[in-house]
Image (cartoon, rainbow, N blue to C red; front, side):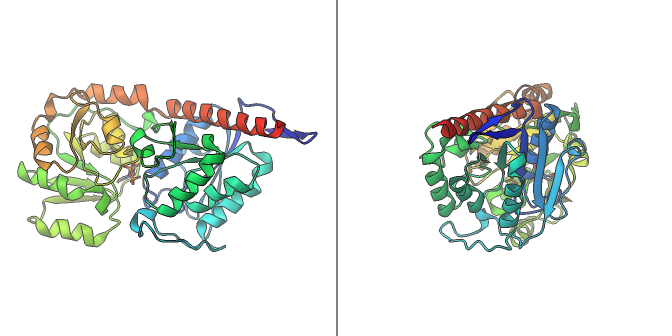
Amino acid sequence: MRVKSEGKIYLLSISRMRLTIISTPIGSLGSGRGGGVELTLNSLVSGLLEQNHFINVIAPINSNLSESCRSANLFTVEGAPQKSWQHQNYYSKTKISKDSIVYVMLEKALSLMNNCDAIINLSYDLLPICKTLEVKFPIVHLISMGDESQEISNIISRVYSNFPYNFAFHSRSQASDYPFIKEPIILGNGFELSQYTYQEKKDGPLAWVGRVAPEKGLEDAVYVASKIGEKLNVWGIIEDKVYASKIEDFYPSGQICWKGYLQTKILQKELGQCRALINTPKWNEAYGNVIVEAMACGVPVIAYKKGGPGEIVQHGETGFLVEPDDKENLLLFLKQINKINRKKCREWVENNASSNIFADKVVSWLKKVIKEYESLDER
Ligand code: UDP
């Protein structure tokens, strides 16, 4: 909590911070349209609540938090929906209207500022980043994607030159999309381990999990599954129906088993029975939540070494990495997947990506930023 005294702001207790988290504007929490940010938010809130921090969450209408986040204050707001940045032209310019969802979410977050120590922005969007320059209050940004918009990269660059500590990233590869960031703060991501059950199952089917959209490269995973004469189970929201139909039409009927979008509780149960997860991103994947979720259930991963997956999967230990777009090596390693000890996969998650580890990293980051703002006040 902060008090003002003679113009200066002091933090009463950094061990119990009051934080406001802005969710993604792309979809309501629980809908799947917000992609990995939905899970990131829930595990972050859960980890921070466990450390006794006080949490507000601002999210689009119809959002729900996971059970472990129930003691957070959830404010849902209504506004005009937005299109995801990765599905727009890289050079397109935005007009932000006052009824846009991101505008309404930011206004709500700012209205809570007096009883708050920092705002954590999880939306990959212009407005919250611009606002950092205008208000004398820590607004920090956990950037959820690589460079998908020239306009957003430009504003990150502008704000970064004044507030270098206010930005953090999920992986080094993601941060490298922003070459002006000299020493990126890398936080990884966090997962509520109690939600994932380890399963010892070596003869199950093949899995692919994610938003069905071109940047996720589903076609390469279907190719290798078909080559070994197996079906591919696909979980996730079909974001691009034309893209999905094109892949489906290319193969004999039944090659893809569409499993739909499931809540974590059921997803992890089904996923845990699989022999391997195939992960084939075509873009610079910021992190790759689904990889870690599979590993938490004991499922080894064969992935393209592109973005986060290249930093998460330990080649030969928790799965295999192959060069991007190299379908023949993907196939080769898929045939060797049973060499991987499933226990090692779960262990990696426990040691590197629990929600507690993630919350610790976020708290150290916030402390650094808050200290910076306090020193600005003293100047
Ligand atoms: N997901 C889910 N149910 C499903 C399929 C996917 O909850 O049936 C979630 C999954 O838990 C993960 C997210 O969708 O958190 C996808 O995130 P990822 O980081 O892999 O990719 P993004 O969509 O952010 O690009």
